[in-house]
Image (tube, rainbow, N blue to C red):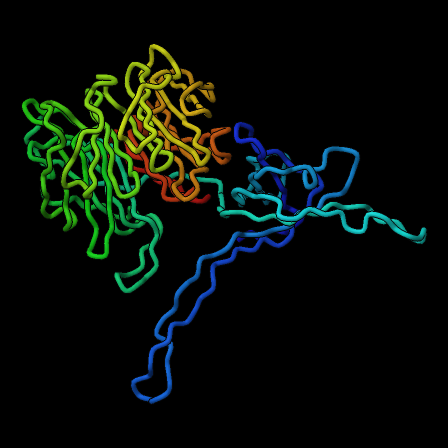
Length: 485
């Protein structure tokens, strides 16, 4: 175990989201405080002693903002502590060796999201006698919204007894023990959706894990009426249990799109048709509050307001007939969908109306979509280009590009929508995972990705635990997860 000293710490700031972090020289950072909210005892009468009460539980109050302080000498150069008026991202790296100003050189790091000065001051700026001199400093008290810890990552492949391609993966969030059930660890309970072996009349497998992927077991029955590949998977948890919702991602002649719903971990399934267009299939989904919105072939978008039991068309191929490849919402009203042929759709009223927006790159198919905490829209295409729009899909900037292949998945950590990941498949194909630590300004590769034949999808449990699935390698399904190095 390595212990750090405060002399190994380095403070960085990101004041503009399109720019990476920069080292703030000669700056000290005071205590970082993370309030958790007051824990208030709840009392009930003691049945054994009249006039006495006993603690019957606790209620946790809403936590306030985190705080820290900054100290920096006053000099004849720009002083960040005095001049910064807008919110910024603060970051501390700890590292024993190497360049301090290199943001990627760290053993562990913390990011203080949405930091903002709450008080600025110059303590004791003038002395009244000449017996001593002291360096004039500037100080600032800072409040922030959320702290996240980052580690360098390693990637490990997991074992799945199956020969099919993995297309999608989903995990439930961490959960403390309560009166509804036992505790659940981070990245412990999840499912993956797989291709079937051949044709349409076969058992489509959904595999589940309750131990973080140490063992994956297949659900016993087929979730679809006609079989078919599973393109997307989703878990919804209520007080009464966990609902599986999985979507068929292959066309069936003479049958519309379909999802399977199970409330008993895949033992039995309710087969639900989506729309009435024969030969249609589902490519993507997103959650908008309690609603599920899916994108389909033919330019269709459907919404379910009852957890998958019924579906209503929001868009029926009037804006485009191109296949929708990815769909995502920034908030409960503003959403985007990306399609083949450089088509981008946008809604500003929760999907009540969809309209064509500007696409980033003509003569390309758009494969992936992610939105960060500022509403910046990131799109990947089959030309291996990553584009970003910071004005709601009016204009686009090329953020990064690779030599051939495609960017097939983009997602941001749902806690802060700041740490993100993408999948790049080269022309071989071989898949690589990239993680942004600065809200999408830069995208360094996650090293040592195991050998694979192309990655199809992923899921971010938190900034340090990212699962990816892909084509079979060595005769078995490929699934791998990142871990703190």
